[in-house]
Image 1 (tube, rainbow, N blue to C red):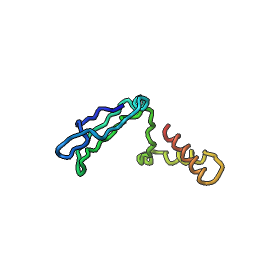
Image 2 (image 1 turned 45 degrees about the horizontal axis):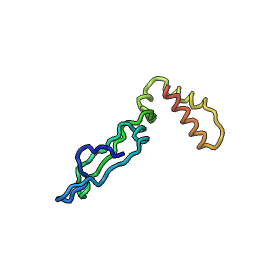
Image 3 (image 1 turned 90 degrees about the vertical axis):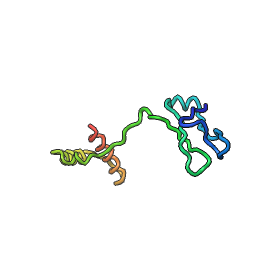
Image 4 (image 1 turned 135 degrees about the vertical axis):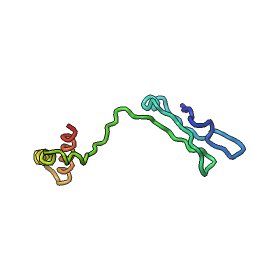
Length: 112
């Protein structure tokens, strides 16, 4: 399936002729997974080809990455709560495994 090209009809020009040489082809199942697919033609700079960009749109179901907020440190009792949580996490194994386990558990508690 060839997606419509936004931003122009052609992807190549030698100054005399114009053509659509470059394109993204996708399968129907891929388009079903990314319903907001589009391809856009950008201005050419040095080449005789116009760059094209495939935009998949927003992917549903993606989790936001966890971010620690420095302002939490100013909240009364926050550091004590983190110390309490940290000492309550019990795990065995090598030190790097224990650290990873505790960081994952702390992340979940901080999200609450």
